[in-house]
Length: 367
Image (cartoon, rainbow, N blue to C red; front, side, top):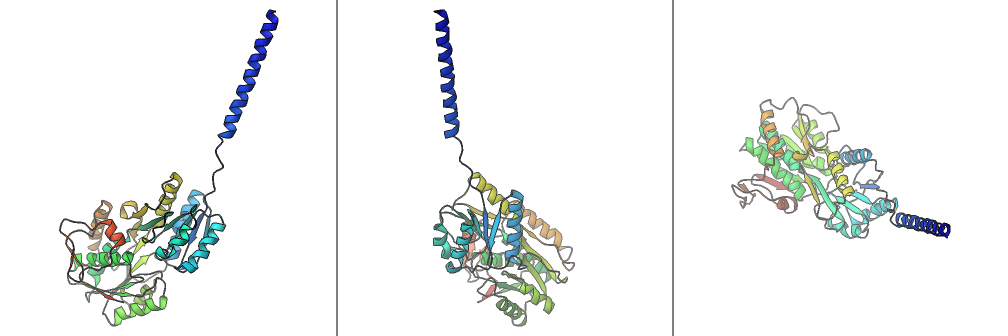
């Protein structure tokens, strides 16, 4: 009898063990995490990625970040900044499996919003501050900080007291750069004037050349800079033997008349954006607008013609930017005489990023 009782208990414990084993296996199977979705990056560019300008420097930064993070990258080049051109470019990238897409030019804004929202499972990042699509974040560098520093050089180097500036599209991005450049120049030369000619496009090389020539021939500018995709303005300055300050990148050898360039360091910004994406920090409320504090903007090597006495002045102002100072502080007037900022005030980031559609006193604009 005792032996039977012992066998019953043994059988009971064996059955219990089997049941518990099945329960554990069931829990493990049903709670197994789903296979992670592969992250594939896409990039949309208005020009070739070896254009010696805007598209190339963006591609270099994005591809370096993707390579460091082990992410595949697909691109589409020569995409016009309109819905007709953007729609098939985005569709091509989505079909390739891209679920994070970077739109690397300022025209991919409100005119493309409906296209972007038609892909709700894709996260878009665009340098356009005008896009409000729910699945889109914006990113840019505070290049105006370097415009201010380069303006110090230009204001000190001009002999005619007239600086020339070729602008691509008239928008807050360009306008704040123009204003910062002039404020920097005026900080060392109260008599300086800045003349701006807009070409209505980021990459119209013929129009850029004509504008640069007019700034020299008709306006008397002896220092040129620009805000467009290609460095045609620098070519004209080199041909005419006048000083110039570059923008975005330095891909060519120039004479000593090429004083410096305001440049983006896109790789750390792309790395930061992708790191946030992995953390789930995404959405339309994000606006990445970083400057000297984060190493996203800088000046290229100075020409031998830049006077030694200017270097400490530039360094001092660079350090101020790194510590949170801003050039859009204190008494600032627009060129119609309206006061835009008081002595102890600072123009807000929101106003700088979205609403700077005016120019400071001393800037003359030609369309």
